[in-house]
Image (cartoon, rainbow, N blue to C red; front, side):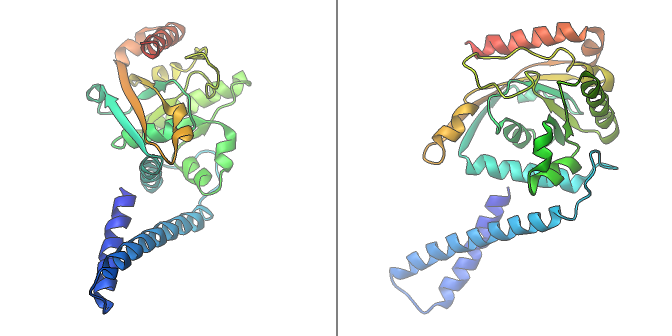
Length: 269
């Protein structure tokens, strides 16, 4: 949404500047196209500088004191822009199954762009992710995702992981947001279609009293290989939605196993 806005502004600026230049021949077209590209680049660079400066003023806290709608908006718009720039064509199915309120999103994980694509598709739903601690230190992005209710999880430390599960459930209830989690625990860089799941992840939905949305994506690992010369088609399939009542009545380990089998079966089609 930001990129089309910048482009429209650039078209108006380029049209006005071209009209002001006393040239009325074929060179007018080249001047107009060159100015449009220059104005668009200038708008994007200005926006990036503005984000950089504003990120330096954000609070450096693990948990924000309250929900920041501005942070969610900036994250969402940035994800939409990155998806467009990466030339990702999302082919989504099952979106009509998505509940109105907050939910827990569980999916397979093959690319660092997976959460970016998910946030851009579920743009109507404020969404945060459990992420690794290193991502909180990324310049510009780190302060915003921290303010956007992203949480770090250390799966090598059971006590810390349990605390993160409780914190995520609390934020879902408090801030009325959805959470995305990759139960494999890390990005799958192997030849196997799916890594083993961590059984405790469905507990977030159980403690928050929200549905679980099961998602399967394909081809996201190919995006960086095909960029910038080729577009990447990404199937984005919502396989099933467990109601909050069903989630509460099931064991976390049973849900985890069933969801993994569901995603694995879809990947092998």
